[in-house]
Length: 314
Image (cartoon, rainbow, N blue to C red):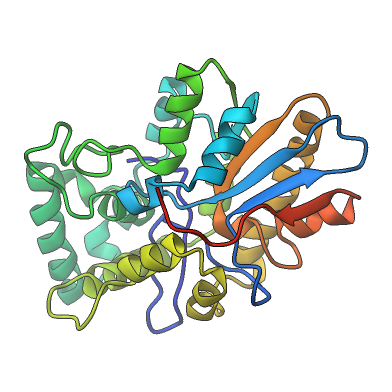
């Protein structure tokens, strides 16, 4: 179970916390529903690339189109939100648990707790007993990664492998980059990302977790919100995703989760792009909008253009 995922919300009735899911709090003009962008100008010796990711292990998300793979293969550096290694996991473990007076059974009503606990026992088995003391954010991450596990596949049900032994897209790209001897860098530190996520009160995290579980029950009509997100992401329909999430983050939480992080990542991208061809892969909601990475780079004098139109996946 990793922490590099982001968060998305539908509305006040149905706020879903699917962290390593996708921050789709964005402002998008129709026709600009793109995942892959080329960055040039301002004296760059070679273009770099910006790609919107979704922090899940769904095969449809992993299947980037040919243009994205070409950009990845041409690059010298892969930049992600975090570098996923053993040291990061140790740092994350220090942030995993809540105080004893803020356990899941305290944060939820008895009825809500029963619903969540049943789902955790179904997904986690004996490990569900540890979930009471985990931050609800981390539990949401686990559930979002464990979407349709296949017990016949290696690693099925293991945290961080997305069920069936698959890696979430961000980690998958880093694995490939290391195999190809590309430089792999993080645009954020674990401390910075944890500070942003900790701006969400535990009570709010718990409520989001409960609503995530409820939305994913078989009794609900139609696909889950995560499934709808994956389908729209696969078609690169970011404008439609915006329609689902236009009421997301505002106020101090939005400032921490989007504005400040976007500024930090744009700053660090600039330094990398000055000397090398960089493929940056970050949660798709960090790209668009008046305070998104695309706008920030354009304000600084770069040319940022969509490299492809939505295309069928490989």
